[in-house]
Length: 361
Image (cartoon, rainbow, N blue to C red):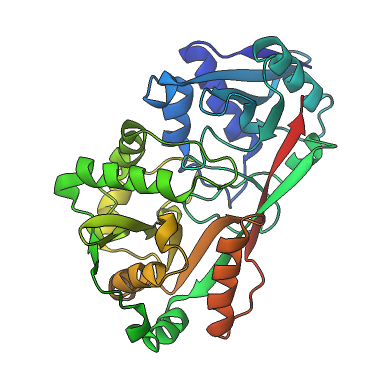
């Protein structure tokens, strides 16, 4: 097996084409992450100002059989990421071939991680279960045999939880008074001031996730580039901001499962936007991120932000939310979620499991 760089438009077309071959006739795969992939692979973006992205094609007997990208972020200089991995089954020497490219292009790195796509905000994880179920928008979907290609490395699991909206709302309503903090206000994003509110979102991310696995500080321009293509699908209430005495202290990002708008190997398009606006038809939303600055962690701020969004979730007809992903080593977030589910009388077993794989160089 050999690896060659995909350095031009023709190379990117091949990089994209192998994904279609891998998931041919798979009714559960969704290609709605294509815009994020193109953003990072093709560039240039604000992310590329401090990160190198090198896409590769995998060949066996002159046949295209897989792909991956090596990403090195100056903000995590010890780490090289094996990202956007896709491959056909029953291949040999996949891991060794990739490690050879790491040794050639990033010999200074001391470890690698499989399944992190540039940054946690862009996507992470290989799927470990629920292969016969479409992913919720923003969650990865991958083939069951992928983990076997990366042997003898540490597995770092992540989980998500599915929660009935009404059950959560009924429990939360019982504790309304306990979520009051004098001086705390909760508001929604203002899309007319999207640059301002994305800057607040970025600042809160960097304040809240310093100790999170694989976190690297973000730049405002990076998050703006990520949000901007989805501006026609997002409403103001999808980003909730908590402020204490007019200073931001937390945020809650959630959005509908836009994957329910697509049933083929294509990204979202303008017709999906129109269908969503005219007739939602989506029954699930995703609780994507809840970030609170250190001095307010453990306070009722998180529940107060969720409560602010609840009326809009119920009005839209969402029956379920899927929360996560949460790294199992992130004990605070994992225990917080399980504690709420237990108090709601729900089973605390994760709904989906994912993993990234970390190895030494």
